[in-house]
Length: 156
Image (cartoon, one colour):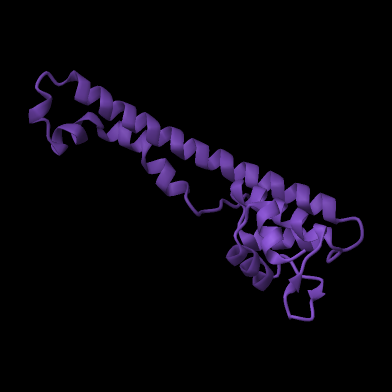
Protein backbone atom coordinates (compact mmCIF):
# COMPACT_ATOMS: atom_id res chain seq x y z
CA UNK A 1 0.00 0.00 0.00
CA UNK A 2 1.12 3.57 -0.61
CA UNK A 3 1.72 6.11 2.12
CA UNK A 4 -1.60 7.85 1.43
CA UNK A 5 -3.52 4.62 2.06
CA UNK A 6 -1.42 3.83 5.13
CA UNK A 7 -2.18 7.30 6.45
CA UNK A 8 -5.89 6.87 5.80
CA UNK A 9 -6.00 3.43 7.43
CA UNK A 10 -4.11 4.53 10.56
CA UNK A 11 -5.24 8.13 10.99
CA UNK A 12 -1.58 9.18 11.15
CA UNK A 13 -0.33 11.90 8.82
CA UNK A 14 2.02 11.13 5.94
CA UNK A 15 4.53 13.50 7.51
CA UNK A 16 4.46 11.50 10.76
CA UNK A 17 4.77 8.20 8.89
CA UNK A 18 7.87 9.52 7.12
CA UNK A 19 9.24 10.69 10.49
CA UNK A 20 8.67 7.23 11.99
CA UNK A 21 10.55 5.77 9.03
CA UNK A 22 13.43 8.21 9.46
CA UNK A 23 13.51 7.46 13.21
CA UNK A 24 13.76 3.73 12.47
CA UNK A 25 10.35 2.69 13.78
CA UNK A 26 9.05 1.39 10.46
CA UNK A 27 10.64 0.49 7.18
CA UNK A 28 8.86 0.26 3.83
CA UNK A 29 9.37 -3.08 2.15
CA UNK A 30 10.50 -1.48 -1.05
CA UNK A 31 9.72 1.09 -3.69
CA UNK A 32 7.64 1.00 -6.79
CA UNK A 33 8.99 1.84 -10.23
CA UNK A 34 7.96 5.46 -9.67
CA UNK A 35 10.03 5.43 -6.42
CA UNK A 36 6.93 5.58 -4.17
CA UNK A 37 7.31 3.76 -0.88
CA UNK A 38 5.49 0.43 -0.60
CA UNK A 39 4.12 -0.48 2.84
CA UNK A 40 2.59 -3.70 4.11
CA UNK A 41 -0.04 -4.46 6.72
CA UNK A 42 2.74 -5.06 9.25
CA UNK A 43 3.61 -1.35 8.94
CA UNK A 44 -0.04 -0.43 9.62
CA UNK A 45 0.00 -2.54 12.80
CA UNK A 46 3.32 -0.99 13.86
CA UNK A 47 2.00 2.55 13.36
CA UNK A 48 -1.15 1.80 15.36
CA UNK A 49 1.03 0.32 18.12
CA UNK A 50 3.32 3.37 18.10
CA UNK A 51 0.37 5.75 18.23
CA UNK A 52 -1.29 3.99 21.15
CA UNK A 53 1.86 3.44 23.20
CA UNK A 54 2.87 7.07 22.64
CA UNK A 55 -0.42 8.09 24.27
CA UNK A 56 0.65 6.12 27.35
CA UNK A 57 3.64 8.42 27.71
CA UNK A 58 6.38 6.38 26.08
CA UNK A 59 8.97 8.28 24.08
CA UNK A 60 9.76 7.31 20.51
CA UNK A 61 13.14 6.09 21.72
CA UNK A 62 11.45 3.76 24.23
CA UNK A 63 9.03 2.59 21.55
CA UNK A 64 11.90 1.85 19.18
CA UNK A 65 13.54 -0.26 21.91
CA UNK A 66 10.27 -2.19 22.37
CA UNK A 67 10.04 -2.81 18.66
CA UNK A 68 13.64 -4.01 18.53
CA UNK A 69 12.78 -6.52 21.25
CA UNK A 70 9.81 -7.71 19.20
CA UNK A 71 11.91 -8.01 16.07
CA UNK A 72 14.61 -10.16 17.61
CA UNK A 73 17.27 -7.63 18.58
CA UNK A 74 17.57 -9.29 21.98
CA UNK A 75 18.91 -12.48 23.50
CA UNK A 76 16.52 -15.36 22.84
CA UNK A 77 13.54 -15.39 25.17
CA UNK A 78 14.37 -12.18 27.05
CA UNK A 79 12.14 -9.87 25.01
CA UNK A 80 8.86 -10.38 26.90
CA UNK A 81 10.58 -10.09 30.30
CA UNK A 82 12.39 -6.91 29.28
CA UNK A 83 9.19 -5.41 27.88
CA UNK A 84 7.30 -6.28 31.06
CA UNK A 85 10.02 -4.64 33.16
CA UNK A 86 9.83 -1.45 31.09
CA UNK A 87 6.05 -1.41 31.46
CA UNK A 88 6.41 -1.77 35.23
CA UNK A 89 8.97 1.05 35.26
CA UNK A 90 6.52 3.28 33.40
CA UNK A 91 3.81 2.42 35.92
CA UNK A 92 6.13 3.44 38.79
CA UNK A 93 6.81 6.72 36.98
CA UNK A 94 3.05 7.27 36.57
CA UNK A 95 2.51 6.61 40.28
CA UNK A 96 5.17 9.20 41.14
CA UNK A 97 3.60 11.75 38.80
CA UNK A 98 0.14 11.04 40.24
CA UNK A 99 1.46 11.74 43.74
CA UNK A 100 2.91 15.04 42.51
CA UNK A 101 -0.39 15.95 40.89
CA UNK A 102 -2.30 15.07 44.06
CA UNK A 103 0.02 17.28 46.12
CA UNK A 104 -0.49 20.14 43.70
CA UNK A 105 -4.26 19.59 43.72
CA UNK A 106 -4.27 19.72 47.53
CA UNK A 107 -2.40 23.02 47.37
CA UNK A 108 -4.93 24.37 44.86
CA UNK A 109 -7.79 23.23 47.09
CA UNK A 110 -6.23 25.18 49.98
CA UNK A 111 -5.96 28.27 47.80
CA UNK A 112 -9.55 27.93 46.60
CA UNK A 113 -10.75 27.53 50.19
CA UNK A 114 -8.80 30.66 51.12
CA UNK A 115 -10.50 32.59 48.32
CA UNK A 116 -13.91 31.35 49.42
CA UNK A 117 -13.21 32.27 53.06
CA UNK A 118 -12.48 35.91 52.25
CA UNK A 119 -15.61 38.04 52.58
CA UNK A 120 -14.32 40.68 50.15
CA UNK A 121 -12.79 38.63 47.33
CA UNK A 122 -12.09 41.71 45.22
CA UNK A 123 -9.51 42.91 47.73
CA UNK A 124 -7.62 39.61 47.93
CA UNK A 125 -3.99 39.78 46.93
CA UNK A 126 -1.28 37.31 46.12
CA UNK A 127 0.02 37.83 49.64
CA UNK A 128 -3.37 36.72 50.98
CA UNK A 129 -3.25 33.58 48.86
CA UNK A 130 0.32 32.87 49.87
CA UNK A 131 -0.66 33.25 53.51
CA UNK A 132 -3.24 30.51 52.97
CA UNK A 133 -0.38 28.12 52.37
CA UNK A 134 1.59 28.33 55.57
CA UNK A 135 5.08 26.87 55.58
CA UNK A 136 3.90 23.52 56.90
CA UNK A 137 1.42 23.15 54.03
CA UNK A 138 4.03 24.23 51.51
CA UNK A 139 6.48 21.67 52.87
CA UNK A 140 3.91 18.89 52.75
CA UNK A 141 2.34 19.85 49.48
CA UNK A 142 4.73 21.51 47.08
CA UNK A 143 8.33 20.92 48.09
CA UNK A 144 8.31 17.09 48.11
CA UNK A 145 7.02 17.06 44.55
CA UNK A 146 9.85 19.32 43.44
CA UNK A 147 12.48 17.44 45.43
CA UNK A 148 11.46 14.05 43.99
CA UNK A 149 11.59 15.19 40.40
CA UNK A 150 14.41 13.57 38.44
CA UNK A 151 16.24 12.12 41.41
CA UNK A 152 16.96 8.53 42.15
CA UNK A 153 17.56 7.14 45.59
CA UNK A 154 20.12 4.42 46.00
CA UNK A 155 19.69 1.93 48.78
CA UNK A 156 22.94 0.55 50.11
